[in-house]
Length: 210
Image 1 (cartoon, rainbow, N blue to C red):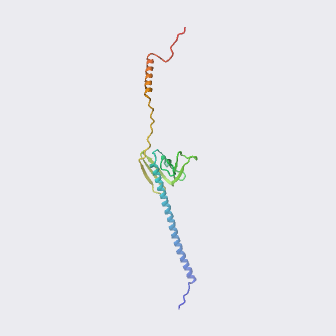
Image 2 (image 1 turned 180 degrees about the vertical axis):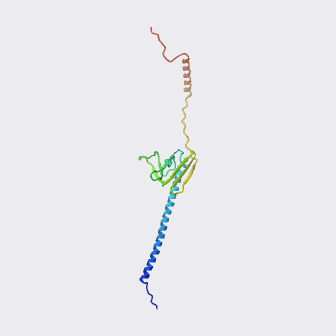
Image 3 (image 1 turned 90 degrees about the vertical axis):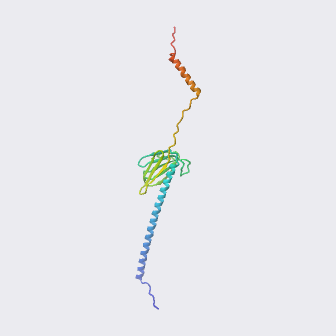
């Protein structure tokens, strides 16, 4: 029988180096795949969050009473005086959409009765919808509302909400005068005219004292 010789020290070193190179290559490929998967997950998550935010804005406007205030500027400001679409369990809510000056984040503010700028005593809920935003434009022709939103390095969102009309103005009617009061007014006018025709000036007559 032929006697088998074991690996020499040099062969062991070469095998170890080759195995290390293979393992390093596999680890690099796995790490790259994990990072790409993480970036893809973050991208999809941000995209889903943006889609949800746009849908929330659409429902806010669609379910509002049409009492809308828009303030134009570098970033527009949209306030809905009353909407039945609430994220925080309110039957009717006042909702404002604004862009923060610090980080250009699009914010949704929900509450009952508050004014902008906010005070510490205002009980409101603030949700950060998306950031950073480079465009938030709102156009309204008293019937249709057009909204454009664009994040930096992302495709813009543009949508139209039709049939958004302001609530009808309430005209206060003057109370009607009862018929008997109208007749009294007419009779008073007639007596005034009669007195004036007789030369009554409304002053007491002259009295001669002897």
